[in-house]
Image (cartoon, rainbow, N blue to C red; front, side):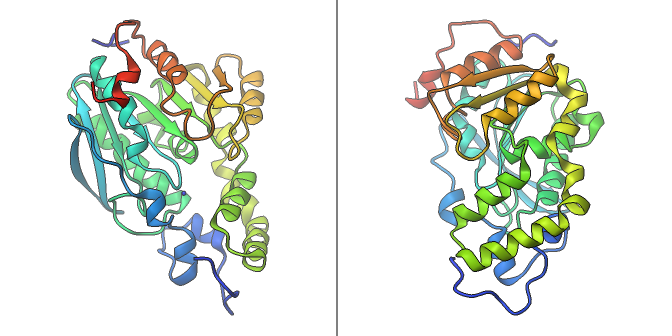
Length: 296
């Protein structure tokens, strides 16, 4: 047991509202803007759900959330990033269950099997807050720890402080440089140079007023002593150098740098698994994490 301790568009529309203002608004974008804010289905479809993981629906004011749960014991909440999904955490969840934890993951809006609505940053934060509250209220042993990946880390750090405070945080490939991350997302969507330039210009005009308040480095400071950051040197979406810099100025934050993975493969790496167990005060080395990939 645990010790309690993210269509190519051929032309620019005549009138496009500010993408970034929509990213910090609860208003659902329409047309091409909405499509930009929702990852392609092929990017977010779930994998086969392993035996032992229960699917469940959670109602919220923002919409219907599809979630996955396994195990018994103190609850660990797992939060994915833009373009990802709860399925990315299935191996970790099975491992956590073997270690005496309850593992709960969910699909953000516009991702996986959750309600198909624009996946704005504010929406990420609102949905994460709902799950933080749900986990705190519904788990008999309470919310014990939080694991997040990429933009999911930003959502967690901007979560309701009383629900996050004093919880061990394990952040994987976090987004410390959102402007660069935003540019990377646009390139990944292959919008074409004209539309990409438009959105970049809108972003630049609105960054300070609309987004800067969500920056991870600032929000994470108050949780630095309970945080572990794992980042791979080969991450071509979020630079590991940003994580290194944060930890250099916040020495109480533990940093795990790997060199054998990338932005995604690090999530279910043996390196992350061993560091995670340590962070959760679980030292039983008999749990073979790689068994989770083979259904043993």
